[in-house]
Length: 346
Image (tube, rainbow, N blue to C red):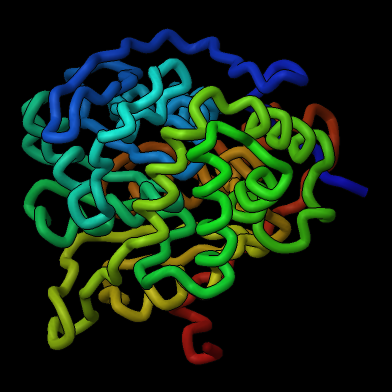
């Protein structure tokens, strides 16, 4: 029997975003034009800066999660700044045909423009999918700015043959401002990963509807092509084959994600004393929507280890959230594997 998801990001069949939290949108000038940043929380708090995945904008990817039951705990410590890649916000106009979209190598400059605009001395970085790739690139060259790095479904290598074939065909469709069944299937694979039939049918239906109604396929084509042509990220555990990342890192990946092996590869290049790899069983790639309570648990424990939330009993909090999420339903604990304990198996 399908497990009920806790919070759904859409309110109806057309894929309309459901939003209740009060946020402020600010426009930031970058080398690639103006980008929109959605801000949630008290700006006096320490910033969490996010970067979203393909086919999503900042709000679709992260707002729902930060409206989950932990909003009070996060709001007490942090202010969330959600960056939209150029032309990817749902209300953006089509980018000009001659617009030069940033490569993945240059995308971190957008993050730096946002950091400079708001005057951040340091921040916690959170990225999902393509956004995780951006945040990892940024962190490697701006280590003094990043207090901690949270990566979801992070891939640091070049495009594999299957992904390349999928995306190359998708770009042609998207450039013609068309969302085809093939393109939607690719986005579903990218976000849900393997064994989609095991995911909740309601959220599958809602995301298919959402992707089918994306307003600017041509803009998405530019982002997809940039990700398709990404260069490998050079870094290493000991600094001999690229720079060493001296920042605490939490990696999250769903057991059914298409990028489990990619996250393992990233982990082999991180300092085991400063990194955690968490695979959430019975979860697709959309962990923040599929298993928000498990994503919350992992993040809170990670941040607590860095000195945040010292007074919170995380286990008690998660039990309360699960009870609130599922009502009177009996909940079972999703198994999380720490790769530092099982790394030898790979």
